[in-house]
Image: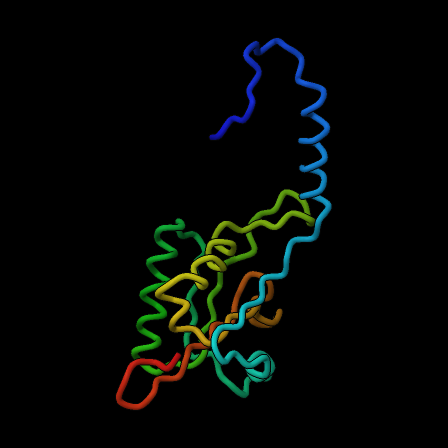
Amino acid sequence: MRVIDAPSDANAPPDPLSRPALRSAAQTRAAAPAPSRHFVFGGGDPGLDRAAAARRIGIERTLDLHGMTQVQAHRALLQFIASAVHDGVRLVLVITGKGRAPTPEARGGVLRSRFLDWVEEPPLKGELARVSPAKPKDGGAGAFYVFLKRKSRGGPPRA
């Protein structure tokens, strides 16, 4: 835990000049809508989302991260994607869960948030063509379509 400008006397009243600034920042964060995290890597095509939702591209594998720790989930995700790439899979569904937010405005879900970080980092980013939120019938806000890059013949996946 990081403490910033802790008063030297625990019984001393808080600095009136710093409290409004802290309150203002907290209120600003709470009032601001969470940014929409939608990912397009390389030659990502928004039409892939529609094709997946309409089942023109089938979900070939599913990974459910419910109940895992962050370390377990990250390891499972890396192995899952590596296996799917090796087998030439095009579309997988990753279920992170929505998390337990204290209020509807708050964004919950440690694994959901971490998943969004992990897909932006190597080695996953190099294997993914597109990541997007799943439609409600496939898990909605608690799941993601993960489109893998196509393999080029006789070599590693194309960038």
